[in-house]
Image 1 (cartoon, rainbow, N blue to C red):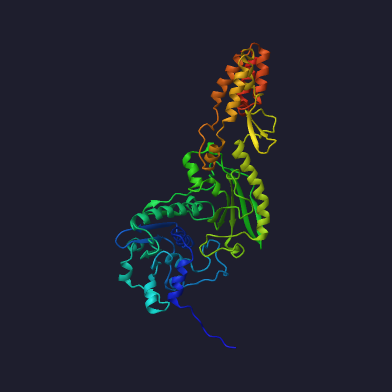
Image 2: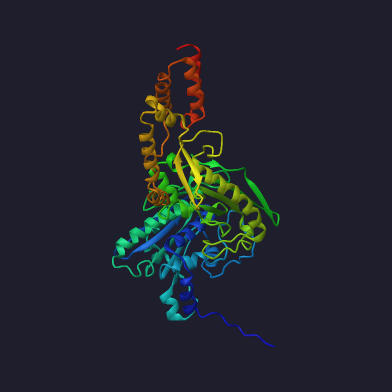
Length: 489
């Protein structure tokens, strides 16, 4: 038996790898990964849509010397099975090339260290003409003609990645200038989420300043940490001696957030499609908005989000893809995640349905009662035993009781349930879904107690109201009223 070498034909393979499936935003994110790995704390993304359009990514990382830049520009320069530093966001040794050439036909990389400045270029048309893996080495004049080179020259160290001949970016677009601007807006939104922990800064990582055309990218926190509650303590799963940290959150009810906060948390797809796991590799977001088919995405679990931190040493178990946009938990991890899911989903249900109040099966007195129909399904009715409702029905010796009861039945029958369902699925903030203030509760309580004819009647009324909505949420108001009754005021 003998063997022969069969190296891939360069023009065919380099064109084929352009179709791996990168979007513009995932391709740019892959370049930012390299900047973070190079210990950069500032990354400036520039784009220019007219004349000779380009997209450029400039960082102030440690840069690459001659040997390092040649290795970086080589396809498959590092095996995915090799050990990597904990801060390394790469994996296959392909990202720089495949991400860049998925969007353009000419990739130029110029890198500056304290000792040298080196430039290399992959030009697809040049590769097709030569039929070889022919990497171009740039001289000083070549490098000076690259967009943003002057900015790189002012840095002590750093790397400039320039994309030119943006054939894929403009494919199918009638107005390239408008299309590039629109797509770069998507890039901004994507980067603000994927790198939000680097942009915000947290212990153990270098805080990153990221800009697009000199406009800073602000972090988009998918957990609304200022308002969310942590559903349960962190849970650590150990696999092959490596730790996976799981931290569940319950987002606040829509009534507790502004319209802009809801939009930021839900994006175009809405909160329903953004629920689920948020998987981070070295604190860079990989996958989000999925339950990995462990439960169905439902309306009542839409406020549940679970942060999962994995190290890069477990990449093979999570079947991480080249684009770093897909990962699947291994079997030993799935078992632990299932138990966590049920607890968090139940917490989301309680927050969504009752905004943190007790369920209707408790000892409290609620305005609405929920019933199950003998014919199947459920229906809602106004609680006639609620103190406020009962007081109205019995007022004036019950003279208007039947009329008021008919009105309540009409209200029950005319609830716009279908439209409410649509609005809630669209994450609309319901205008009348808001809490009363302490002052309003105090005024209402005072009016009811003033209508009582004796102190005993006031004491009894206060006792009934204390466990009824909405007064049960303000025990301190009822306590003050009770003290005033006892003091004879």
